[in-house]
Image (cartoon, protein in one colour):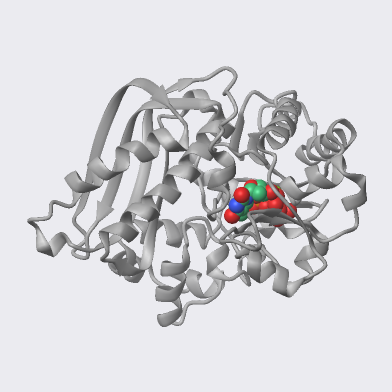
Length: 378
Ligand code: TTP
Ligand code: MG
Ligand code: MG
């Protein structure tokens, strides 16, 4: 058993993760009663190249999920009702939910419009149970917004997030410190924070499929195979995660990066990948109420050499279009045409830094179009 008390010598923390159920679709079903009980798909045009942003749980029974093409979703469930996203309505519901969370602690870290971590360690110091707070939050969200949320309670972010997913939808699950290892053991490694499809593939080739398998791999092997990330895998396999809950005021940057299962070689594909990431970063900035003056991109080459290139603007930006406008120049600086060995990349990332708080972030007109492409707002 790991001693969670020993995580950097700090006291045992109480972390809650709250995530709204089928968020965009639930708002649609709330506002359009005729959609309740129906398979509802929020996203792009099934007749065009649209993708599914999310769908109601009724639609999930047909195998439909986020980021699938809308055309495929329609073929899986022809009777499904397709609706276009109404970002303003989702932002408003998000504001209400985050307001409720902030009644319990100022230590709230929104991850996207529909989810947040809370550190309630101090709020529970006088004996109030974290699970009671979680219960109350769920009840208040339902009463005040007409939407349901799932919550997870545990001793760090990793486990709190996995716990909220465990009883979805409309569920509550607690992973106490003494159950952390057993809870994690059977999960597929892909469930762990930071373990993306490329890593899953590589681990699988090493015979590592579950978190228990990962726990049985030596630290040396993991570091040799994955570098710094290997150390993270070693720790999370043991339920160790000391990442603090960060309010937007403490945050220095908002970024998104991805390692690809196969290196990207076509600069056009690189650029379109970066554009998608810009959408994700913009969504995250909006959820956090932040904007920033510096846009940077990161590229890692097959030999693991990593470069970052940055552009600083006079104004703080957060809109997808504004981030996208910086990308071609930054990509050209990161990958000079004269360097053939750097013609392909294994990782790309987009980050916005130099952050400032934006009180009321104005609605983004471009958001709708964005959702025609897979937008990962997680
Ligand atoms: P999620 O919390 O991942 O999904 P969800 O709330 O729809 O469903 P659940 O949590 O019950 O599994 O994402 C929150 C919202 O973000 C979602 O309602 C729509 C949006 N979104 C996208 O636009 N594209 C995506 O690829 C994903 C995953 C989410
Ligand atoms: Mg959700
Ligand atoms: Mg979410």
